[in-house]
Image (cartoon, rainbow, N blue to C red; front, side, top):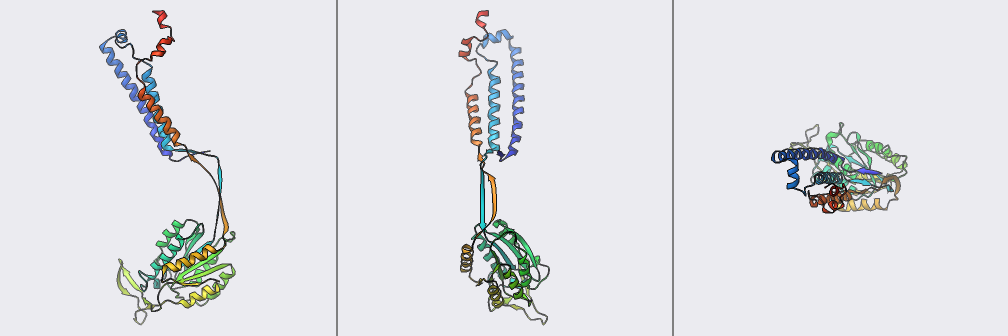
Amino acid sequence: MYQLEEPTYFYYLAILPVVLLLFLMVSWWKKRTQKSFANEALLEKLSPEKSTFKPILKIIVFMLSLAFLTIALVNPKMGTKLKTVKREGVDIVFALDVSKSMLAEDIAPSRLEKAKQLISKIINKLGSDRVGIIIYAGNAYPLLPITTDHASAKMFLQNAAPNMVSSQGTAINDALEKAITFYDNEEETNKFLIVVSDGEDHQENTLEVAKKAAQQGIKMYTIGVGTANGGPIPLKRNNQIIRYKKDFKGQTVVTKLNETILKEIAQVGNGKYFNGTKTKPTVAAIEKILANAEKSEFETKQFSDYKDQFQWFVAFGILFLIFDTLMFEKKTSWIQKLDLFNKKAKK
């Protein structure tokens, strides 16, 4: 079994016919110039040591050197050893609140950015665990299906914003409903749901849905972002605050952290509530919970263990290049002494 790491470098082999063509053109030009200077017999006497075979051998050796160095750039890899990799972990789904109340800046830089920071740092602490992301406001939408690609998870997370959800409001129950169907039921893994929100909830059956999720074996943890005093909801244009959201009476809306519903969800879901004001202890606590969770094998992969072979081609390329440099175009004395074509007898 073999593998070519950079096959595009094979295009460099197109240099070989160009080199050969240049060699033939120079050889033809030399012969024509020499004929205008003297006849063949006289040229033989003037340069008796000149070999007609050596220049051909030199160009062949030089072309072989170029060919081997080109193949070294392609870097062929060879190997037949199959490795089996088993991955163990848990499935973690983050339900991120992206309602407009999360734009409040009672926690710097804002509740939403603080929530993203918390989730990103938790993902950084994960091993081979799988992660998924749900965003919700008036409705819930899957932002990223469950995956082991943590880099993609953080990239999608950074793009989460209120304008990604068409219906505004806060429907935690819809996020919980979505989470129930989000996991792969064929995989017997530990299922964790981490809800990151300011706790505003406009629905009444949230706890009923939470109980339903708990019956499906989903452990629910909640992280509250915001303050008890709360703050207004800024409306921005080009990152500049133009005004604050007002209610139908014209009063500025002040949104406050509602820890009660988040604590109740965590209690029903056999989990725990965390206040996300301080990032480090919250992330450390979640990390400890996930690290101590029973890991399940959810993925087994087999792949070939290929090894680089470019060094051999570099060695042969350099060897042929040295050989070409040290080879002179005059006749080899020891071959002349062998008299393979019996030239001495003919004289």
